[in-house]
Length: 494
Image (cartoon, rainbow, N blue to C red; front, side):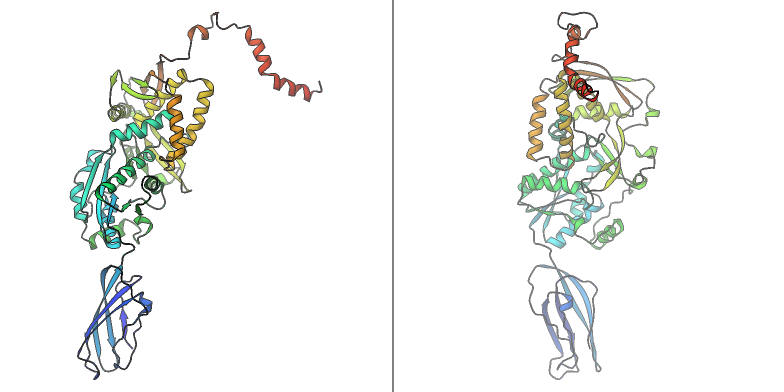
């Protein structure tokens, strides 16, 4: 009986037998047998009239393009043993022409490039968005991408678009997720995904891909944007498909495919950085009881080490949108960068929280958002002058839903866009300036002014005035408290 030893396996294989057999008078000394098989289980090898020579057979033929792997087969009977080479061809999961990959240059995305080529038979265009993550993360990317097998690297500077069209609308809406999170990563993903759709159109790609894991929020944020902007694009998410389970597997795969493995020191934390914030997850942070280590922070100094003298900063705002710092008008990205530097040196904007991920689990994250914390304080404080009580209450209630939509990746959802139109209209009078004091991690408002202020000193003053007659309060109180008075009368039988 023949024996077959497989070195690798796949769902569908092509077999090529080559060997020599001297014991059979019915065939030539050399033989060639090529047959396509749907699976290894369908491989039939048996002794026959050929005196023990293997006969490979299957019930059907499979003609998909394949990647080639080799196995060895040992064929033998009681008279002779033949060693043959069998070539296995791994079928493609799906044939794609060109894929745009969200690329960082790290280990995961470097490995994804050859994996896409191997499993989808496609060209890979790597795309990197500059959203303010730092120049060091952009150095040498083209060489890395091409060494991994990419045909092209596209880099786009999205910093101004990111701040103007994504961060500032959330700021104007007052969107904060679960009381603390200022949505740094949540806002960045749709601007990156939108750019990927644009690049796919420019290069003629029929698919997009990302390196997000199957346990996080980002996979949803990327893919909902793809669906909204171009539903015809195929989406490939390797972490939900491949057999790689961790860093060591990825390194081994890279070596087998001659992909240069990044030599940078592996951080113990999972980090995401952009112009708005820096997030930290993983390692000791996975236990909510552990205090973060002092050397973990990168955008802000420890408040204990911050200057002993406070610093004052004045934020100019027009229609709910920041436009200047200390009287100097700046572009959106430049303004945020300036405030990051100011806030960072005073230890502003550190948040440690346990949040509810969209996929159902809780996670613990630590966020540094120095400039964003200053801006949120300024805008909300100016609204105390320009918005009335009912408007603030409605706006705050809608802000919760707005934040939830952004967190869930529904940036291009008509509901968020409609809510944004409301926020834009309701804050059109929120113009003025706010002065804040920064001191050892705290932000305190020291002054605010607006040409559209609803605050009137002549009305609010404890001194008598013509507009507000204190005697009128008696009738107001009787009417406002009438429901409570009637209930009390009922309970007492009056």
